[in-house]
Image 1 (cartoon, rainbow, N blue to C red):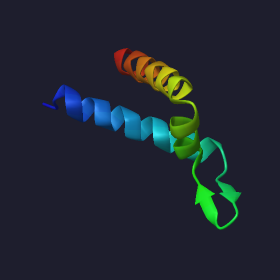
Image 2: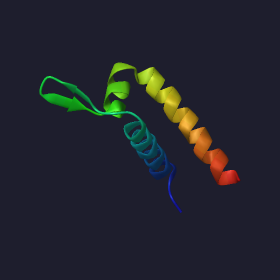
Image 3: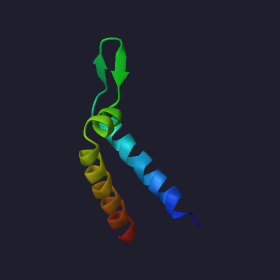
Image 4: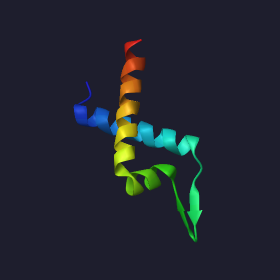
Length: 64
């Protein structure tokens, strides 16, 4: 059985993968950033809200 920490890490990784699959990378000068990096660094509140909604969605899908 997975610990809560392992579940939280998997959920965050799943959310990051989702963001990076849906939106393109952004290149600024010689640097390239993933959408998840940008959102988490520039708007951590929006990232946390999106993560919570993603967690709710996964829990809902698990219960069906």
